[in-house]
Image (cartoon, rainbow, N blue to C red):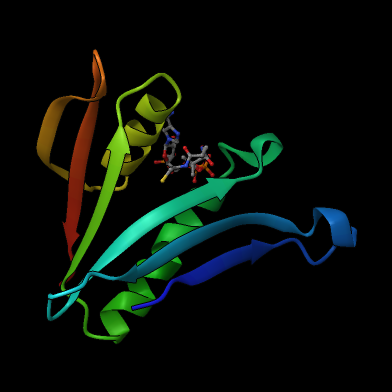
Length: 117
Ligand SMILES: CC(C)(COP(=O)(O)OP(=O)(O)OC[C@H]1O[C@@H](n2cnc3c(N)ncnc32)[C@H](O)[C@@H]1OP(=O)(O)O)[C@@H](O)C(=O)NCCC(=O)NCCS
């Protein structure tokens, strides 16, 4: 199905520092209109400034325009990724599943979705 990427750029920065964040996604196999958000990251020194939200907002607009209905994302509850879980919850993603001890003892797999209207 292939991966697609949305990037955020700082056009005022030097070439080395221009990429401030990215979001990688792809259509979910065997579904009509579901997409997986595989991975996203914001440059560590720029986190907490709204770039992650802007990337997800842009992603959701594009997906809605392309007729997608459901976005799925999976994350871990591990230290660090636990913060990612809070980020997705803050962006109104809904936890729909949790497999306890999936990665290792006390590190669970969490599945979240957003239904696009
Ligand atoms: C998770 C990540 C993408 C968030 O990007 P970001 O640019 O720092 O997030 P934003 O500044 O856009 O935050 C958006 C909202 O989430 C909230 N938020 C962000 N991190 C949070 C945290 N750790 N706990 C609670 N809320 C959080 C912010 O308060 C903000 O809310 P508001 O807009 O209502 O004020 C970024 O921290 C990151 O790259 N982390 C490391 C890589 C990673 O874990 N990737 C995800 C794997 S898929």
